[in-house]
Image 1 (spheres, rainbow, N blue to C red):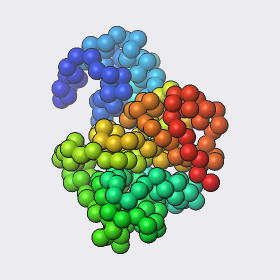
Image 2 (tube, rainbow, N blue to C red):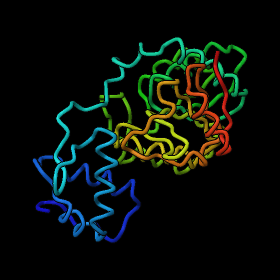
Image 3 (cartoon, one colour):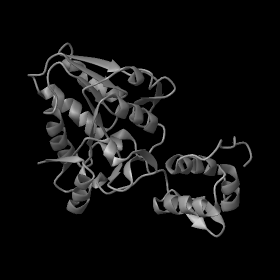
Length: 267
């Protein structure tokens, strides 16, 4: 593995798979044997990792290893996804906003659904003395009209233009030092077996820090329920509530309830 530092010891499967994707960049082919040596795991483990990544559409399996997938990056800019499922997102946002009481501190994640939550919070003119912490520039701008009813705090960090988000380094320092009442998190997939997942890797660590700071509410339209993406965020047992819409797969929702996730359906 030229020009890449060797991994130190065995790492969790989801982390190892993210590292495999990083190693794939700039390469036409990567061998099972090389990955086995690099990570200090068996060929069987590496093959399982590659099979999983191939199922998710991030690589293509070939004899002896894998090659990059020829499809474009699955992540789409904020502006392209804003209109998708907009009615469902607005309904989800109204349900989410009614979980908030005056005097609370709220974390709002990056994303189009959480942006809808910001608008729904503004629409609740009964709310006072709300502190909202966000890594999202566009959410901060949305919330400006609610000042001074709301206090809006940006996490700081490095700007990521794709989602207008602030990430590490520095992005998580504030989140490590606060306790909030509720964190509203977005995601690209939630599955009862494979947890809450995200398409892009840079924002995942910030989301994990949000999870540690408060009660955890995932807001996800029905297109995300039952989906699995490359960046693992957490197990479903680590979230408290899922707010979704009527289009979500009933079987998947039943399985999530079996895992002790409270389900709220927006109508």
